[in-house]
Length: 81
Image (cartoon, rainbow, N blue to C red; front, side, top):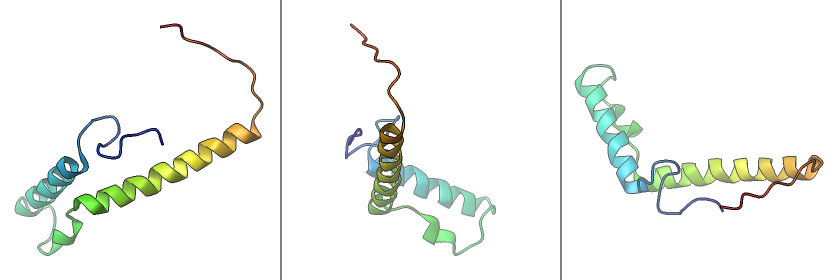
């Protein structure tokens, strides 16, 4: 796996931090009247985000591996940094 288990890719935010932001945003939308009352089910707990990320990243990784097996290697490059 190419990502850290405890953080959200690209932001280095933890799953708990991301769920806090998402849940707060849902509350703000409800307070502003953009979402109807009773939309609390849209709040994201850390486990919900973790499972969703695992599902998406797993399918993307499988797709990339399949594409690599089906395609022909045409170049090999090395970065010497």
